[in-house]
Amino acid sequence: MIESKSLILHTATRFLLPLQLLFSLFLLLRGHDEPGGGFIAGLVAAGAIALYLFAFDVPSTKRMLRASPHDLFGLGLLLAAVSGIPALFLGKPYLTALWWELEFPFFGEIKLSTPLLFDIGVYLVVIGSVLSIVMTLAEAE
Image (cartoon, rainbow, N blue to C red; front, side, top):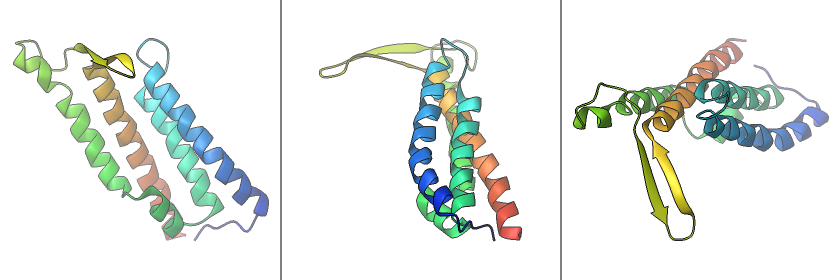
């Protein structure tokens, strides 16, 4: 079982994990207009969680995640598949991109889209698959 006894790694991980997850969300949301998106954001998030795994151990990483990597994978696959359904109701081909503009009192105008839903699905699939592999390897050791 992988576990580091390094105080420096433990401390650095506690500071870096939230920063890396925030950066992964930035990459996820930026991906519609600029380079980035669900895949690279998922890799950054999985890397952050893998760092936590190396600093601590598998059981504490599972407690921190609060969800199984397999569940994340399944939820991501479901979101990616469901993102194409709204286009079918409008008589368009499956996975045609659609956008909605919603007005909220305190936040102002927010744009939601099916590509964003698809990217969130890809994000969760990448996190789930990478963490499944890394945790399986860590548990086997």
